[in-house]
Amino acid sequence: REAKILPISLRFDLNDLILLHKVIFNYIPLRLPEFLHWYSGNSRLRNTHLDDRSLVSSIIPSGRGAKRVELSFFYRVHSKWNLLPLDLRKITCTNTFKTRLKAFLFQTGQQNVEPESL
Image (cartoon, rainbow, N blue to C red; front, side, top):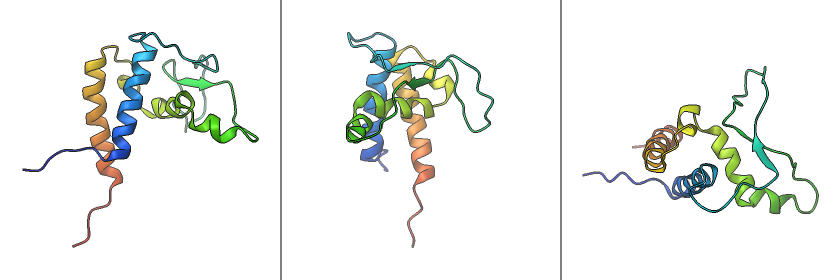
């Protein structure tokens, strides 16, 4: 039998996104920081998929503290959140979100892995 185990980098993404989901839907007593807010506008660019479930940051990391901001949990994970399909970001139930997120990560993770050479 073949075990289905996510690569470690995707497991970190899974856990980060589940925590962010719980914050967004108020399942834990932690709030989004003030620099993150929901996108409220129309995007006419083809390469963007910003919608009402996309988080945008009001800060742009620059200068000496840029790396610290880029590595902070909320700044780092909001970008990953925005890359998820809209139907996945709209799920309010944490268990359903977790199950579908795992399936999504397995699917996209296998597409990004090159087949082993024989």
